[in-house]
Length: 627
Image (cartoon, rainbow, N blue to C red; front, top):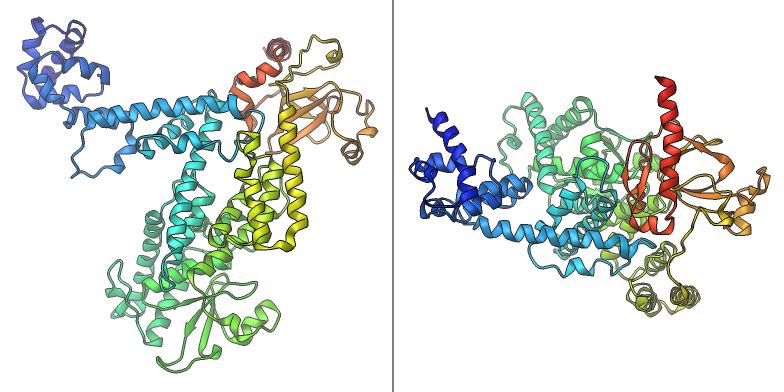
């Protein structure tokens, strides 16, 4: 019966919305329904926010049901932006209508800014002060971030440029927030020993688009602790650690009871859950991210030690971190409390090596060298994080295909947040900005970043005068070049000097020699690289040498290359190119080719027509042959 009432009432609502007249025949039928039925109808999901606004203006009863703090507007907000609901407490008073308006406005502002980025920053990396518009936005930052996430989650293979810049903006916003949290964390006193919290900040900063939280990671560790307790119960059903409540920091002092905990931990971690040190892929940044250590159940000595340390302390075993050279360790005190201890009063635990317990002599054998007693000492949180970030920094310096040097940039930011006066790292950061061309938006404002860094270096260490002078000179030269730039270079296929160009931007190609798939995002009528590059790449050995068209291509492995025309051919089975910069140049993938965004099309205005013609000839002919 109730269902029938609801159905008939739902038929009345559209007419009511259109006419919006209190005298309408259906109005009395609708408003005479029980309040909970009316509320159910209005929250059913078939009405938009505009519909609710019009319905609420028809009579007092419906206006009261649609009040801003009621269930109707809460449901409208929840359906439109479900991910935001976790930020509200059930006990809070919320005017959902006002929240809806603020969120809607934030979404419009976000889209306006994202749409402007391609036009402003197409020709260069987003500059250091390119995010100033975002920092000055009014309203809750979570609303702005939510809109960026909505853009990233848009279905299909369209809006690629929007997604590209939404990702960059979201990356920046989250990193700024995490860096501020890390700096506040580092201000804690030395006896504040939340090693896991610091490690999670590093994880979050390097993976700002991933959903990583200390709460979630702690919950995963708590589940491991429960398994350890289950095993421990089989060893000693009256063990005091079994009585610990979540969040307690009690320690057990008896060595035998501590030993039982470690035995149970080793069984659960290494035998049951199959955690192990990652010897096969040691130099992988994933080994340092705590959420990845838990997912992949592998890591390097320092990350495995932090996991082991956290679990042990939750169960009452006071292990301590040891910044041992080449192999991070934990130490477990065997001496009596209150006595003077030396390095021989500890057992050293290798979490990377399945929890193996080592003597001082065995520790030296582990790394193949004798070390001083000072290196067996305990280190504080900041020193542990310094080592983690130092490992990331070393990985970031290694050569690879990541031409954005994102890991190097992130690890430099983290290291300098902890130690802002490290001259060599400041120099490296300045060189990196210079190499990547990450300049402030206005050329004459370079002092905001690069020159600012260089001035700071000169103050810290006047001996670096030569290196600083070199970078200052090249920075000023960059300013002069920017002043001389005149408009956008437009390349017309119909021009006589481009008559030999066979391929167009947006086409999916295959390299004849190396076999990689790629998409063209630019071309030159002849090779425009310098003599040294031409010699190093052995271009003269090609039949047509450097006197042939060359193409800028985005390769599926994430690299950008400059390929000779004779080395490229059409890919008869076109596929998306999973390159991080695809959205910088293209707005859509059609299944056979990419469509250039407005900025790229300005530079190659005649290419799109050529692409359509090529696609028609190549792929339509193939389809006919198959049929």
